[in-house]
Amino acid sequence: MNFSDSQIVGSIMTDHNFETTDNIAEADLIFVNTCSIRDHAEKRVRARLQEFKKYKKTKPGLIIGILGCMAERLKSQLIEEEKMVDLIVGPDAYRDLPRLLTIAESGQKAINVILSADETYADINPVRLDSSGVSAFISIMRGCENFCSYCVVPFTRGKERSRDPETIVNEAKDLFNNGYREVTLLGQNVNSYLSESGTGFSRLIASVAQIDPGLRVRFATSHPKDLSDDLLRTMADYHNICRSIHLPVQSGSDRILKLMNRKYDRQWYMGRIEAIKKTLPDCTISTDIIAGFSSETDQDHLDTIELMRWVGYDYAFMFKYSERPGTTAEKKYKDDIPESVKSERLKQIIDLQQELSYKSNLADVGKSFEVLIERYSKKSGKELAGRNSQNKVIVFPESNYKPGEYVNVQVLSCTPATLRGSVLHP
Image (cartoon, rainbow, N blue to C red; front, top):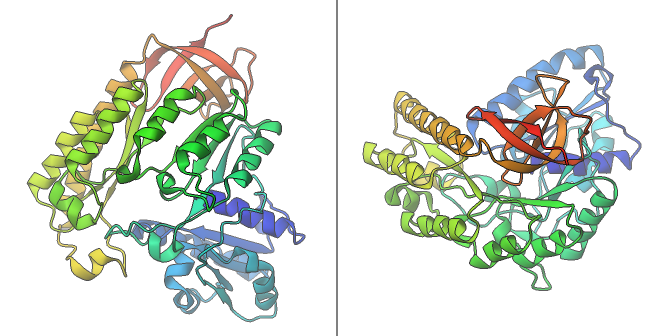
């Protein structure tokens, strides 16, 4: 979502006679688009701001702005703590950037962190920053109203509001006509997408898939309580809707799920996994897991480990619990799990996921997949890399193909993270 927001900001600034630069020393304006989901993310932002001090010294007119969730959460506190910050802009106030820049250029501090109930930036054509020209993000909705007890997003991004479906389909059409071959529909919870005209997410994703069979469609992220059978059937109906679902579980313990206010229990989640595997047997499943949430016992942790084994996740994003100020968890529960215990539990989760990912990849050795080439391999300019429908990276020899093309690749070997193969020539 932040990457997508940065592209919206890029478009607004381009319309006001700015251009991007790869050389930070040339910049007249530096924006840091921030995340508040974990304390580690905020610490990285503060470290980055310290790096920018040297540019302030050599370029006195340089303006530094903080954008996004951290700007919304800390507001004027950032101006006081980070003296060199000139601009604080929340995620719903990017249209106001030109006016705020005028204020900042006059030597005053400029702040706008007002949350909106209707801003979707639907009419702004994002500047595709650092784009491969192959794959692009499309933000279909903003905000969140789930209020998981550990999460700041509802407070930093406001109420859910969905874009008009016609603007989304038109953006996807334009991308396809300009050579893009994959779009990812983005939202804090895409399953709860609902336009004013009554279009739900299943109808929306079908409309995007109908643009052209050569356009792959992905989406992120799903909330388990809203993952419908209708969506799974729609995915089964269109081969170009990718066979990959990210379904954050966070914990395998019913007690912890209730404390987290996740609005489902272990049995419900397992039912959704069974529905995915029944309707889409070739679908990969990924997840998010938090280790060491408030009052988590050894048994709660083992419940998570057991659920991981039962699902057999193909990959996962795994974190230690990070208490966020202002959340229900911070107000009501103690962050009482020692850091050493959090670290040990996270290590066990990561080690298990390595095992599960390797097992998943080993099962693909010998199989053939259609791969959308995205780039040259990071390790070798003589190898290409792309993803299959299941969102797995496959690396293979160049073979006179280039990014943006589809090729059939047979998997010959693997690591826990990557498949390696060779092109099957017609």
